[in-house]
Image 1 (cartoon, rainbow over the protein chains, first blue to last red):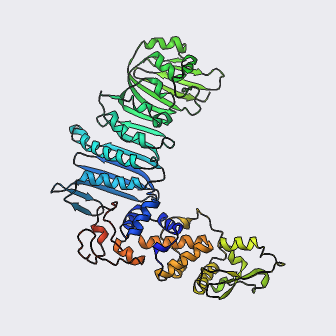
Image 2: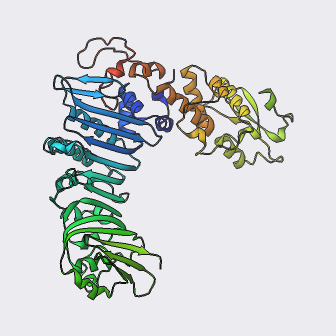
Image 3: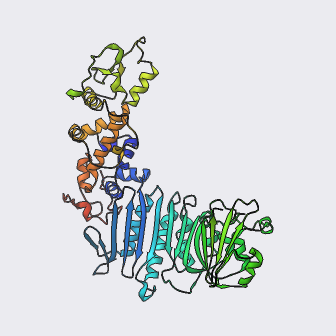
Amino acid sequence: MPSLSEMPEVVMEKIFDKLDIRAIFTLRTVSRFLQDFIDDVVPDSKLKVVEVSVYSKYVWVRYTFSDGSLIINTYEKSENGGCKIVTRKKKVFDELDYVEVFSGDLGNILKFQKSAIQYFSLGWSDVINGSKEIEPITDKILEKLEEILKSRKRKLKVKNVRIDALKQNQVLSILPFVDSEYLETIGISNPESPSNEILNIDKIVQLEQWKQGKILYTPEHIVASSTEYFTHFSKGIVSFLSVSVEGVILLKEVSPVLRRQKRFARSCAFLSSSSFDNFQIKYQRFEEKELLSDVLGLPSNQEENDKKEWIVKNSSNTSFLKIILTSSDVYFMRCSN
Amino acid sequence: MSCEEPTTSPTPENNITVVSSDGKEFLLDLKLTEQSETLARLISNFEYDRTDVKKDPVPLGNITSAQMQKIIEWLQHHRYYPKWEQNDIHYSTSFTFETWVEEYLNIPNNEMFELLNAANYLNIPRLFSTICRIMASRITGKSAEQIRTVLNIKTDVKNDVYTGIPIQEDSSSSEDGMSEISLSPSPPPI
């Protein structure tokens, strides 16, 4: 009597293609043959969005799949210190740790993910009482996540990533392990925002993922870095403690001298980049701000509230950039003419 | 089917003969063979669509006469359907089917698998994809034990892998597993 295990591989793959990951995981427990086959073929999880929120007492997760179906689970400590999963129904595993169970499930689903995830976010919630309780839980999850991502044969394809982080290492648990070819947006948010803590990003800016990134979103962190690592982004927001005239000019255009020194991953900055759209720099201090007019010329527009505007163009008159300076920000915008 | 019967009677010009594994001959309208990529390619390679070419019967060694009968029923029903496209709405993972299709595929699992194999061999994408979807719909939402029944998977030893204690027949066994996205428990030995 024919059965599934006698089907040609192409037939089985086709059936798997129409199953959601839950059915595939159940199928995997049906027989040794199916377990081996599934582990060998690794059918796609077809995840589109992963959103994780870490609370002090539980972890919430929502998986959205490409067909629109959802899995929403919370993992919390059971009355006996084990794990309680609240999904369509409650399940209690008294002998297991809830963070371990959550990390294990996330690992299973990511292990099977082949297609590109549109959005991956890992956030910390209810930090009103400070993040002291949440940070160790997140670190434990990140440690597992790094292990999972490292063990994949191919890097995880993620288009947009958002990570809540207080330390560089927390970002480094995820970012180096996503496929830089697919990555577009890098978001590093601050769970304790607003805060004046400075985030060191010296290792992050050296990553291929950073260098290939297109959009940067780090409005709530004051980053310790130089503007030279931001010239390749086509959109973004970043906060610095202090900026200089040189730093701002560098974002507009990399000077021929520096270009010759080959200090830059890309020799072009905002003005000559074909993909540039807009970029915002927030600053707390701007050293010798008034000298900006010496370099950019007289502002084309100047308002009483210390707001100045310049329109700059490249040498061939084909590209225009609007630079707006206010008491707290510098905006760069692509102009049509 | 009556309304879809060909209006012209079969003539040697617009037919080919296929022979099933048990030696039965079937006269197939060339219009019907367009749905099978395997047959369409064969007809084009041997130029069987030309009237001046001598047509030999085509042996289909993998397909029984019962399966051939079933497949012809499918081909006739879909005779006037537009050519199958990969991105057809029916290609999606939707588990709703035409009433005709549901009745047509209301057959035992072993016959379903045989038909799936035949559809794969003859490369009839619409039939192949539809059976895959039906199979998937019969697996989705079921426990491991229920899937074993659906897929004709026999586990000779019905003992727990770890404890050796015979497993209770329980239709909700997957619900007792870990979470829904767990890779445990391990499957029982066969």
